[in-house]
Length: 215
Image 1 (cartoon, rainbow, N blue to C red):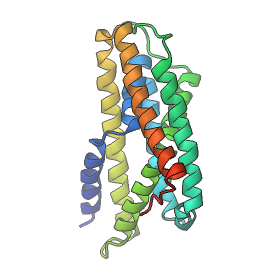
Image 2: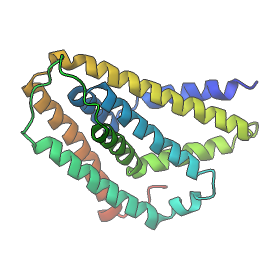
Image 3: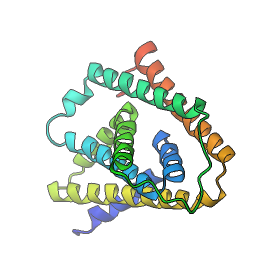
Image 4: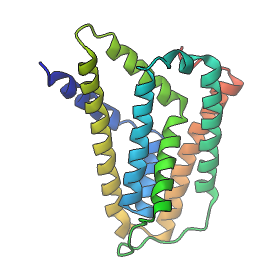
């Protein structure tokens, strides 16, 4: 049945959508402080990084990415990126209240920055890479799935993730009317602390403990 793979992909995408990782908190923080367009572009960046992870598993680059040294460097850069961005959000006190009637940021620089931020926050997390490579391996092992079935499955999965991220961003933007400077300050601190914790964990795992993240 042709539609079954895409239905399975949608179901899997809904499961992924409820997971709370560093990009979730960054998406909410961006949507509230900069508006829905910036949040939407960040969601697009997250989608592109997920799609890239799926893509490399089907074009012969899987062994390269699975190399412990490659994954180690990804973890180092990703951990440092998260620690740096998390520290900025946590300790930056130069914030202002967001007014509900203030136009969203729609400049090319702001939207492009949000897209790059979403792409890097997701892609430079080695656990995200391991996760998607594992899913790709499982899907490839399904006997009845041909190339078209795999395409439909991941189309359903990634499409669902994008839609749910857009809904999260839109919902967060609607909260702007209740946001004061104090709320923004604490939102930044919470989001920054989460990113700091994830970044430090990644650095500890790949640098100090020298873990193989594929184990």
